[in-house]
Image (tube, rainbow, N blue to C red):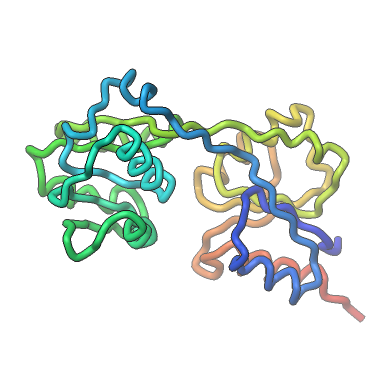
Amino acid sequence: MKINNILISQSIGSDTPYLELSKNKNVKIDFRSFIEIKGASSSDVRKQKINFSDFNIVLFISKKSVDHYFRLAESMRFKVPISMKYICQTKTIAYYLQKYIIYRKRKIHIGNKSFIDIIPYIKKYPKEKFILPSSDILKPEIPNMLNKLKIFWKKAILYKTTYSDLSDLKHIYYDILVFFSPTEIKSLFKNFPKFNQNGIKIATFGKNTLNAAYQAGLKIDIKVPTPEFPSMAMALEKYIKKLNTVKY
């Protein structure tokens, strides 16, 4: 089956490699976020009995958690002190912090990829108080790891994830659907409970997304990341080349 069109289940910026892929392979690629983010209000935070001034280390696990932490800090008139320490799960998140703070004046620890990578940094401060800005959806292994450390920490739900309304896609067919999170898989079936794959190719990024797709009964054709294809764009390019190559 030749690949003609692909749906990416996220909103992608103008610098995305998928646009170059679309041009080079003559494939139509659409972008549509399957989930929506709703920021918490100051009153929502207070209801959780969270006071930002009680904590001196912030654990950041996503760029969204950075945005909503500083957004709410400002709305709640909490001036983040220069002495505040930050532990970021990845370099991307740490670099994103520069949107809000001056690097040279702050103490920042950076992990490599997974949450487990920042555990050694957390252990360095056994008597400090940690706050974990998060959405309402959090991988259970994260609080499990923090609880085992026997430290003082609290999760602050600063934004919530909801399913997008995808009803306008009901009669639109794509050759490949691309997913990056388990919530996007759930959104698909929330919108289309009777979804039938019917030969549609499914691409997933990450172990949790892959497992969610399997649990939903989907057949997975593209699994990322792998040593050969660390990015989804690379995997799609290879897959399209394989299926769209005309054989004589």
